[in-house]
Each structure stands twice: as C-alpha cells, then as structure tokens.
Length: 366
Image (cartoon, rainbow, N blue to C red; front, side, top):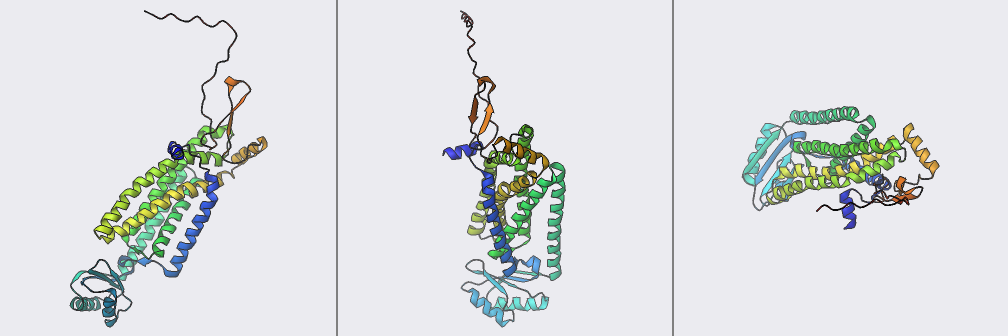
C-alpha cells in the first residue's frame, strides 16, 4: 500500500532507465512475432478490402462442415465459413461475378435456409478503400511530425513517431496472429490508437520540458535523470488515463460483442483495447528512452555528464540528492525523494541561538 501511495503521489521508486533495456527486448520480441505472423499467414482482410461476396444464412442445426460441403458442390471450396451464433452462418467467397453470386445465393437459400444478408463488393472498391487507408496513414504521420517539430523539437517528434509506428505494427501483428478480421472500422480504431499514443507521449514530453527548464540550468542532473524524474511524476496520470479509457472499451466488448453478438463492435473494440495498452507502454518506455538517448549526445548534456563524473556523482539516475543548507552552516544534509534523483524539498530553516538577550514577550490584550 505504501508503494501504491508513493506511486499515486508521483514519488514512486521506479528507476525507468534500468527498465528501458528490458522494454527494448520485450518490444523487439513483439515486433518479431507480429512481423513473422504477417509474413507467414498475412492478414484476414475484410470484404471491403479484398472484394467478393458475403452471405449470412439462418440455418438451425447446420454445422460449418455441412456448409463447406455445399460450397464445394458449388465450386467454391475455398470459401471462408464462420459460425456467428448457434443458428447464423457467415459465408465469404472471392467470387465477384454477379450472376455466379446470385446462383450461389439461390442454392444456399434452398439447401441451408433463408439468406438474411447478401453483400457483394467489387475488387475496384476494395482497392480504392485500401488506397485511402494508406493515404490517411501517411498524411497523419506527416502532419504529426511537422506539428511536434514546431511545438517541441525534432528529437521528440522522432521519438513519438517511432513509438506510434511500434504501436501500429504490434497491433496489426496481434490481428494477424489471431486472424481477426480487419475492416474499415478496424482502420478507424488504428487511427484512434495513434492519436491516443501521441497524447500520452506528449504528456511525458511536456513534463520533461518543464523539469528541464527548472533544473537543467543547475547542471547537477543529466538529461536521463531529468527524464526519469519526469516519468515518475506522470506515471500515475498515464495509468489513470489508460484505465479510464479501457473500462468503456471492455464494457463495449462484453456487452456488445459477447452478450448481444454485435461482431462490428468486436472489430473496433479489440483494436482499441490493444492500442490503449501498447500506447501507454510505448510512451513510458520507448519514446522517452529514445529522446533521452538522443539528448545525451548533445554537447551541452555531454558536458553536464562529464562534470558529474568529475564530482564522483555519476553513478546512475537513483542517486541521493545532496544539498547545502545555508541555515545549517557547512553540514551536508541529504533527502531521498522516492529514491528518484531530483530536487530536494525545502525544509524549514532552523534559527541558531545568537547568545543575546531574548526579546520581551508581548502582553496579551484583555
């Protein structure tokens, strides 16, 4: 409970630089799994991207094997068949010829049951949707990079874009690994993920700029130490934001998808939930680590680090802060702020006795 209380106040003893290397290993593992899954089995693209024909048949007691046998008799053995609920079958085929699709529809209606949904998308439409989705992604990255470069600096813009790209690759790899269908609603969710990840990253960057502005001129702290201090101040905020954002999404999935059977909510909700978790992780462990590594190579911060090493205090970001208390003479006093190296809090000054006659106490008024 004491650790949670310290974390809530922003004084938790979390040494983020020591965790950055482990986070790099975790991210590399996730990226390899996601890219490997994408290379081996690809993505389960929806009808709007690939084109073809989709049928939803209400057929009580019919199994997926029975429906597959019917489609094989019709010359469409490679059709994808999914049991949506106990009675509803969703059948997708790559056939885009209207006459052939109508023939399959009539056969399914006579052999399995009534057709509730019949949808046909041509390949031109699918290619157009894919092209617009890629274009929207490129425009998003360009506008964000320009804004962050003007508002902050190019190093922070680069770190934020790398974190967002990491989130998208991990999220798409998750969809590829479990073969979840990607629809236009999923693309919208991916764009929402990028916006959320950027928000969390900018909160961290804004805090480190504030800390650097207050303490950077003193040349008593390296940039990594200042980044560590800023992260400890915003960690609880990021956790609260992630939890408050994830709770509605979880409710959407449980009520909308599992209970009511709305598959469109699953396509949107799963992407959001994965993105919220990955976005918070990348803001705290990837974007901050990359900016710290870039800033530490600047001449100013190299000089600060060299001075700290000469003083013999360059032993890491969790050093005890030592300060000279003018009211205590030459005695050195130390203060730990949640084990995170940062500015010492002000202590009340102690007035030393002067040896003179104490002042006469005032009389109380009647």
